[in-house]
Image: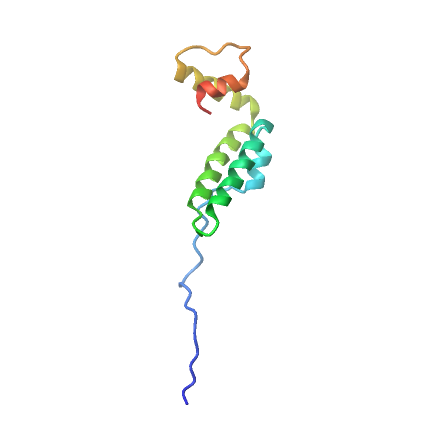
Amino acid sequence: MTDMTAHHALPAGPPPASSLRPGADPKAISAALLPADQEQFKQEFAQTLERMKGTLDLTELHALLEQWRRLAVLQREPDRFHHVVRRAAELRTGRPVPADEPLETTRADAGI
């Protein structure tokens, strides 16, 4: 009688590094976002998780986290974020942004 043993082969070397950038943790992203964006992030995150069920493919989730991480980085400094939004709106529309224009209007013009 021959003894048979099954072995699971793991790739040699260290595990692959995460494809996520530092700060791409959902809690960190949500905490860094302006209150007006936190709910939208949470909704999009939940919808993405729902679509991923059963696929085992994290590509869409990683893309969503990276998109929101970038916005969270900008929003950490609200004055800088407002400046970036105003400048982007001016470049997109070709007109100066009125000083009293609400941020949401300027963001819509900027596409941010």
